[in-house]
Length: 261
Ligand SMILES: [Zn+2]
Image (cartoon, rainbow, N blue to C red; front, side, top):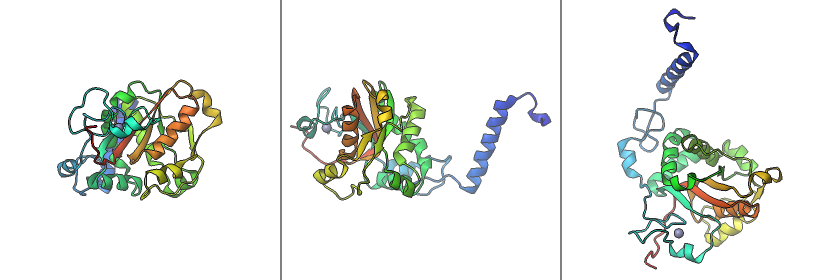
C-alpha cells in the first residue's frame, strides 16, 4: 500500500480514485450547460441563463393530468378534457412545460446522447411527481421497439426511470411491458391518429404477469403530448390487473384550454 494512503481503507481509496477520474474527465470534456454551452461547475448542471429559460410546472393544476390552471379551482378539480374522458392514467405530472427551451434539452438528451442532464432531470421529476411516487410499487419506462432500440442505442425513458429510481427509491421494472408493434413517429399526428398508431403496440410479458396484479405503477416518458402512448401502456397494465397506473414525464405540451368550465 502507498504509505500516505495507509489507514484510510478501501472505501477512501475508491472515493479518491472516483474523484480523480471525475477531475480527469472534466479536463477532457469540460462540463457545459446543455442549452447555451457555457462552462458550469459540474456535468448536468445548468447555467443561470439556461435555468431562467425553462418553465417549471407548478400547482394549481388538474388533479388528473397535471395541466396547469391559471388560478386555484380547489382540491381535486379536473380540467374539462379529463372530466369528459375516462383516462386509464390515474395521475400525470411533468417537470417542465414543453417549449422551445425544454425542447432543446429533450432533443439533446433523446437524440444527441447528452445524458449528463439526467442529474438535473431526476430531481425535477421527483419533485413534480412526489405524490405519485409515495405509493408506487415500481417505475415502468415506456419501452422502445427492439428495432428502434438497436438504432438509437438506448431507451431515453429507461435512463430517466433509472435516474428517478436513485432519488425516489422506487425500483425500476423494465421488463413488464414490451413494445410489440413498430409504430411510426407520433410527431405531427393529431389525437386520433396518435391513438390509432399505438393501438395494440404494447403487451405485458406473460412471464411477468404475477408481478402486476394489485400493484401501483408509474410510467416514465420524456414528453407527454396527447398522452396516447402512455394511455396505451396504462391500458395494457390495467388489463393485466394493475390497481393503479400514473405517469411522470420530463416535459409536457400545454395547450390553452378553457379551465373555467
Ligand atoms: Zn386534466
